[in-house]
Image (cartoon, rainbow, N blue to C red; front, side, top):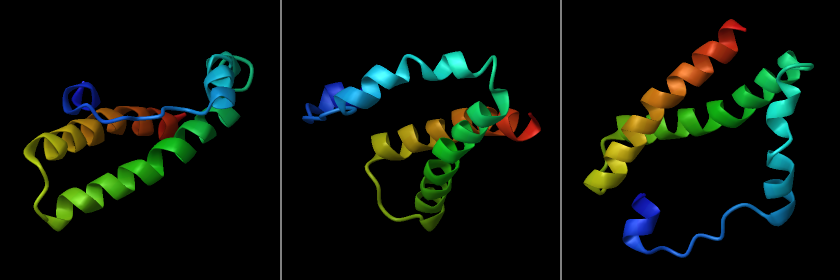
Length: 85
């Protein structure tokens, strides 16, 4: 929503990744450990970076700060579930 509102030209995922992304959830059933390893590999670095940015207390646009805070809170559930699995 934020990207739509600010009108930024965002290229999105490369075509190959977009095509592959439809098959990734199918791996969760037969290969749950590699699937959740992938979840952690994707979520942990972003979560770590966003937490550091929020903790630094540097001036961010209020919308960006709120989006990051919401994202950290939401991703905590995914990360927690993957760690428990």
